[in-house]
Length: 264
Image (cartoon, rainbow, N blue to C red; front, side):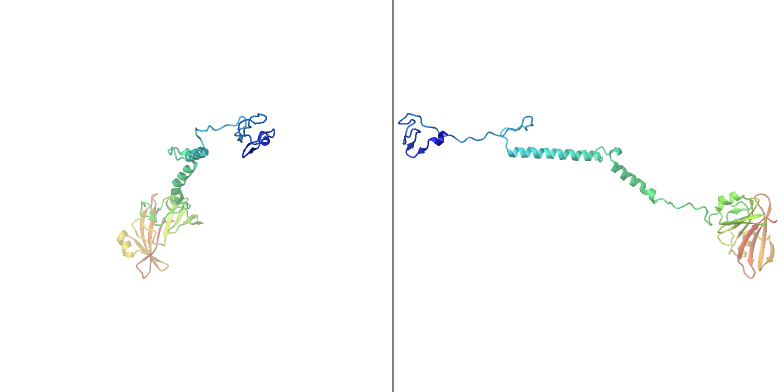
């Protein structure tokens, strides 16, 4: 290289012909021009391969500008993702319940809360003993009248606890009264509890004075098995003559049981 063949000396420059100390621009012996020193060349900037997209650089762009542009793109992307999920969950257009499965489930859970609090216990098929029927005759006890049918009995008292057949009759047991039927018609009623009352509000435990005050003194009196029996005569719903009996233990003034029947 020319820079290697010619070496500048402190007192001048040397020519390739061997002349040293030249001061001008030409060799004093051979007249060759003074060689110029080669300036270091910077390598050309790297160019992207053909077809590679090149981001346009702003005028006077720098590395800081590129970082800012990249951050801006990231922020835009994140915002787009947030908007997408917000729309999906029903944050916008909240009146459209179909936009959000989560919202629908929440509303269903809220609306189903009263259903969870509802009573799911099985229905009872017996009525409370204290619930009287509108008794229509004086041959009535615990909500039942003589002359009603078995279907009427179950409608009023519910399902019986037990039943048994005896002497051509069927007897149905309830907590407050025993119902006797013949041919599907109620023909007798017996109670030994103060929960079953007559039409005139008498029951086991009532005093004999209260019974006489309610029904009068037109009764037939007899004794049986250590009890005084006070019997009143009335007509049943189906037109038959029946008996209302109050049994009082002898020596007391309190009703021990009440029975109503159609005489055989």
